Length: 528
Image 1 (cartoon, helix red, strand yellow):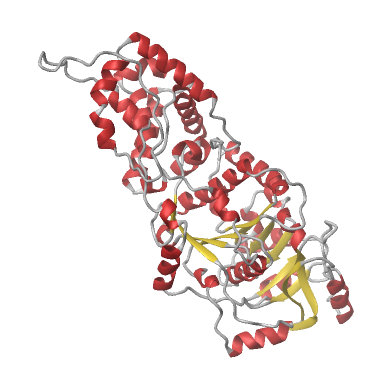
Image 2 (image 1 turned 180 degrees about the vertical axis):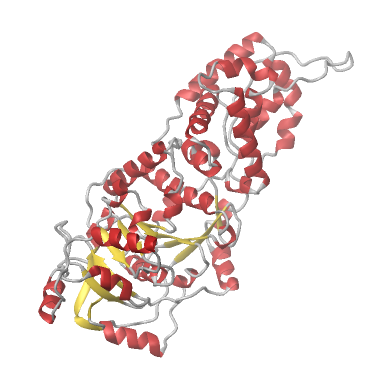
């Protein structure tokens, strides 16, 4: 057991956090229940792209820690992404309310507390709940992430990848769930039987299972999350004219019962950022810090391929100046290969009420560097708003482990009023860009046009065959509808029966398929 820390040890710990460059202030060193305001615990701004972990039992103050870090990042010009699962993070947009408790905490840790809100954009998945809608096209989302949402096994996941490959090769755009359902439905139909044989490893039975799972997902209302206009993740990198970083808050209270869905969407945002951002090496500050709340949901039940993709994304995205903080209850929730890459740690209190709790506590202690504290005792005795901290120094070395009384956020510690949140959404310039869904011609319409139709009567002779014209995306103000595509279905159906047109379509499909490349997660790489 380590010896108890002394006031001299407190000074040595403080020296380990005396950085010369810009840094975030976390709080004051804590010893025997007393905070030392002249011994500050900080984290250098330049190491936040080395990722981090915020962990602790429910009710120990993790959310307020996120808020504290986020508002300081914003003040120093670094954009932030936060997921608001319980609905209590929206207060970061408003100045905090002075109180005796806040003043007391500020005095204890040497903080000059001033109420101040942050510039915030509020988002929602597919418009479910308050916020600017975030949507992804199915083809951009990719088979690996979608298989996680659908809870497919590894065999079914591989089969879904084959369906995506087929659609890419044939020029069948997968914008929404109806498109993917239409492609699988076609492959399992008598008309598509021959096409199914060309996809090695995909059986009709497995395709049928995926089709039923997709139908169930769409019936549950998840179709709203997929489609266009697709969200451009570059929106998360914005700053205000006065140089502050915009805090992007994804409002998720309406989806608390769909954790697998929203956690996978968060991974899509990261995967898209990874493939779109250029390499920048090691800048003096990150372009974005991304807080991944309820991180255990991402890893639970994940396939080997999915875990490998997460690990590689976390490893490589730091060179693109994006820092990721996983937020969960214990470090055991994060796979070892990912945990090894998290250089900055803020560990709130853990409980040891059961044998499993005791194992989790022991495992957590083992992940920290050597410490003058008896961490097993400290971690079970920390109060709300206190944590054990170790970060990377400016030279990349771990700092001394420090029990810390954390500072109080300067923004509102609680939700803002619903009216104020809605007013912020309505006033955002992004609302007009993303609020209304767009339904372009895609796989659903193309396959519907191929459906058999009654032969034309003499009064209505079939239209002469002619090469199909390439479809063009609608103007930003336009909003094509499925009814318009259905009206042209007869003409397109007769054209597709012409062998010359079939040959042309196959050639066009191959050409388009060659232009679709996919990332680690199978997400499509877009051209901005």
